[in-house]
Length: 368
Ligand SMILES: O=C(O)C(=O)C[C@]1(C(=O)O)C=C[C@@H](O)C=C1
Image: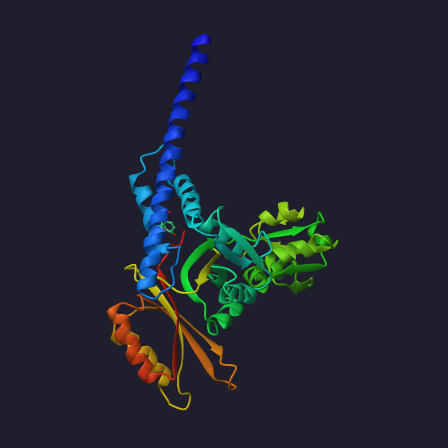
């Protein structure tokens, strides 16, 4: 017994020594991150650009490298979480970094934002997607996170309508698997007379709603968390939202994973004042308008990408709000706007469009 206590003491001494090394190494790393920030500041001044502390392409490189060198026993996802926090700390060493997202706490936007930026930055929750854009445009937040598209229900119209009219730029994307739960104060589905949720979440659960709640009133609200908040104050009301809302708002989960498709995933955009240079594996999003009186005008615009062998990864259109039945087209293509191929393609595109507006270029991220 005495031997074992002695062994425990020795092992704890080993841990203490290792912790000392880890703390010293973390501080050494933080000093290097501070130096990087100073160098980036000088480069930005020379090039008359904005210094962007967050570098999504570099973060992906760091994650890739730590996973390659990892020999265990720690699993890769544990190391990724630890490094998420290490880089979160680097991001906030020099100055306060404020990130805005569609709140309240517990929304999918909140989860995507915290997964990406960690615990050391300051978060600012906003009531609407438009408010997230406003906070970035007015420089009240360094970055904002907005939902862009869902694998089941398509484009988030509130976001795309802001993207075509904003000075903010898309600088990264985040994929988040989405599993919706049905939450209520009541204990039985048969007591439910009203369902709150964000319109996108209602759309992603249409099969469940039709099968189990066909005649129940559906009330679209600004976010899934706000839906949970409302449901927590009304008997007979329920909310479609994430499981974390159960704890936050003191609700019961009456049905789980009610989304139409089990691989339901939402892609979020990180918006800021500018985007980074090419990483070698990027995407570019832009909007354009064509002369509506000219037959084949849209076809000519799209043909530019075929001619340059540029893959189009998304196409959408939205009403122009200037003339009835005139549309703005939104395209996402592979490549960075500073790549030679894209530069040539965009100069040709400018010749056959009324207006072309680059919304962002960003490193292609991995769908987890
Ligand atoms: O390499 C950089 O550009 C850094 O600012 C350092 C660092 C890091 O801690 O590794 C910090 C934040 C960036 O988002 C990416 C990487």
